[in-house]
Length: 556
Image (cartoon, rainbow, N blue to C red; front, side):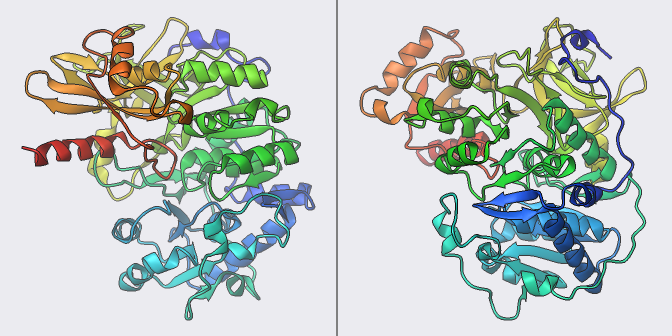
């Protein structure tokens, strides 16, 4: 295990952690006992205290028990960011169930696949999403669907703009179980035996290399990263966390939901990303901790009056998803005095395995391995450990690594490799290198490499250069077939509003040609009005690449 990064470890942060041997729901139970009247959630101005949240959690756990939920049964959450998600999550854990959080953007067929794969007995959703999955739930024989409404927790006088779709959400469909009727007169939940090694969470991978896979996480693997998040960000009960990341995804789940609950800090919860609502929340509630992804920070920094807004309460802002372009990192630092703390993790590791030290971050780096993580770079062809600075596949061993894929023993076996020292490592599928100081860098996904006339082109590297152009708002680089070069490098670009109509694709190509090697610069550039985003805010490069190739095929 390389330890060169320890000399750059954050000051006043221990190099290892001791983890509580308790189930996840005890984070809420403990905070409710310590801070009963403190808000756990601030939802567009509605304050839900820790004691209120714990009471509703126990009631829902009791209701689940009466519906036949036993230890190990799966409960699916098909929800946007709402209090229903937070309460439903911890209630299912208290009932002894395994939570299967699902992307609320899934269409019926996609949801049906995950529902069948997980075998969930209970589904919790909201009135706007339920019609999409009603037939699926009925055909799958789901024993109960509990349906909430955004109005359940919205205040009469909102303190932030509420998205129109929430106000126009349909009423409850007759014959379904209403959220509050499920909570009413529910019995005390029965005692359930727990071990920290029990599987309690089944988040699904994005499926970029095939069908989504359920990642089996235990109380112990999740707790490891919850405590790691609190410690690295120096969060306390006096912190205020802004939750703009989707809670169904592991990054939002750990950093914006479970970490504030565990430390007893309020979470300002937004159902959808809205930069004006986020700015109002930062200013009104004194937000100090904001986990996000770079697309959100990019959008926030594009606010016309951003330099006049009061961001002084922020003291930890970080995340990942994609490298933050240096020009944006510099602008963020100039406005706030803070360094954007980039990190790295996977669904398989329930978020972070690497993080930049807040007081010694390196732009473009994913940072150093965090508490208990052994990370290495392996040569792609030989799978021997690569030399410092050499590219290879990043592999990780640590306390937050999944126990395996749900009902997929072959995929589980393929995902791990045992090295010469007897340690078992998870293959991340990401290409990168480690520098002489122990900082790691990701070049791209193992299968995203573009073969340009025999040269390897990593799209993220090209995107990083494109972001330096003052006209570029967002960019996605893909490989498209070419008869002579095998693949061509193509850039799909959305422009800043003030640059639309004032620059051409050829000008971007010429600008790129001056800043990248001949084989790297995009030979093709296409301006688009906007780039799509996944449910977690990432640009779906694989989908865009497939669409481009289908378009080329249809022209032949």
